[in-house]
Length: 94
Image 1 (tube, rainbow, N blue to C red):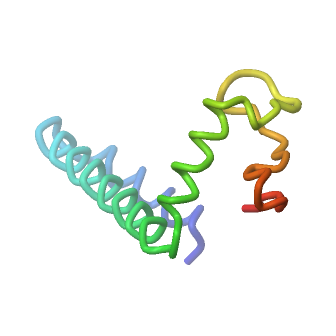
Image 2: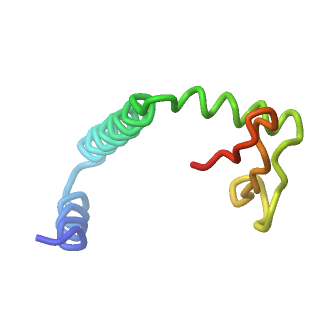
């Protein structure tokens, strides 16, 4: 069964529920979404050096070492990384 088929079946089932059961189903779906986001965050945090890279990037932004390129708005904005640590002479890559 494809994802689209699963979504369609779930929608059909949801339309048959009473208001109270629909509330319970919605709460359960919210719980599943939170679990999934939590698991994704755990995977990222398990990457060696991930938090260090985040902190370094925040410091680079604070010190003006990153130059905005393209996009519009904070979410779409990307940064061109210069020499993140000039003393090391190496550009950082993600």
